[in-house]
Amino acid sequence: MRISINLKCEKNTTIPFNYQYQLSTALYNCMYDNNKEFAENLHKSKDFKFFTHSWLFMPNSKVGKNGIICKDGNAFFKVSSPNDELMTHLLQGLFKVGYMQINNTKLDVVGVLNEKGYNSNIKKMKTISPVLLRTKKERNGIDNTEGLKIYDILPQENSEKFHENLKNNLKRKYSLFYDKDYENCDLDFDINISEAKSKRVKIKDSFQRCSNLKFEISGDEDLIKFAYECGLGELNSMGFGMIDKYSYKC
Image 1 (cartoon, helix red, strand yellow):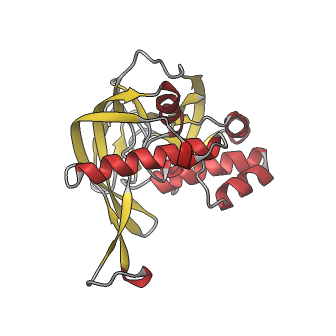
Image 2: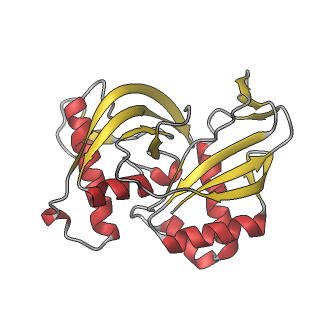
Image 3: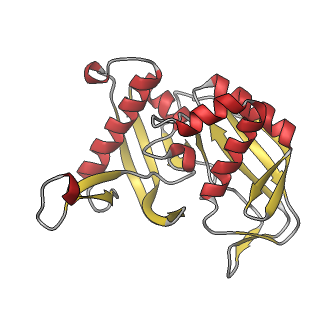
């Protein structure tokens, strides 16, 4: 299920550049308000969360010194998940709470629209929140757990590793969600990247390097549909890896 959430704030409100963590927190708060136990279990889970969201779209905006200035006060973003229960709690919570909070900025929820599901005829896609992938490498010549460091993977720097991790990550998520054996999962997909732009995003106190992509996707339809619903790459619930057809700037 995929929805578009329309928001309204005061004109010329400044939205901080790195709002992704606050937006994710606002979504959890809506679910929490509708079903505390479900939201707490989801948040505490060490497994994949199985939902993703886009960045905020502000069609009438400009970049200011301290953030993005929403000139007319109109914004929207998208949320998607293959988990119908999660989306039900989110929708009911949105209507109960009626607003989302980003730092000290209150954005009223003025509308929620159902989006069309995955269409197998759509093969040209783009990210509407950037893809994050990471790997562990040894540092200082030390090949042990203590000597490993986490590195972000960009397709411009290591295309082979990027594609390998992208596939493995999606297949692990798919296998876990549908309770299938990952080792024997014979589904596969591939993406042909036509454009990749790196982006630096701050989550809590650390910066992540990630990629905005335009690409063509091919492979098993079940896996592609799951990517469309759940997102590509890591930390989808923090606002990474949501994909859509060519329509929007990001």
